[in-house]
Image (tube, rainbow, N blue to C red; front, side):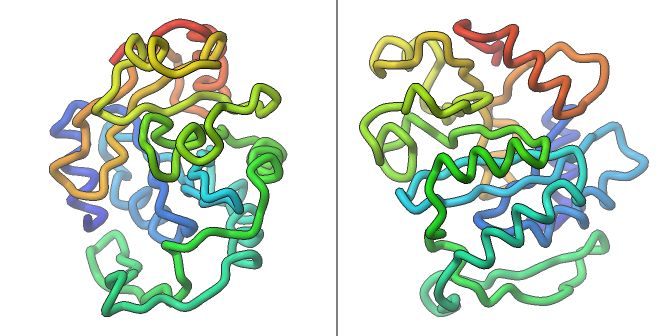
Length: 223
């Protein structure tokens, strides 16, 4: 998943906007943004955080400055050191596909931050708070908690490629009035663009996404 390869694959798949959301980390985001300069692809920086409840949720931002305070909060609450022989190499790669360094934190682990506090922190920094892969048994909000807390102001709920919005509304309670989106959640190049969400907007900004999600409220997002 080198930055240049991510950009090339996203363009090949016909995507206009992607988010770079590593688990509990964001060091690779600026390099993918740089790799996309001069191309038709917009790259938004983000992070996929694991909450105290082991629920995964995504924060997506317009720029790295908005993301930085959230990353600091995550690192302050993340315990443990990566075991490369068990969990793999956590490499940081620049826009020239050169190794910049390694992240030794246990990024596969969970923070000790409650879910509601993470959503609040994302919004405080102007970001989008999206519940990750809610149709998965592990690490999705429904799988971990049994339901989507009605008082949690997620901007959208993400479905994996395995699930359609129509089917999700049939089998999961509590999705009425919620915006459902689909994304590839790509961990490998071949998965980039497997599914997507079509959003009509004048410019690819967080605020434009927020408004579009509100208009999709309670309906199936195009994919």
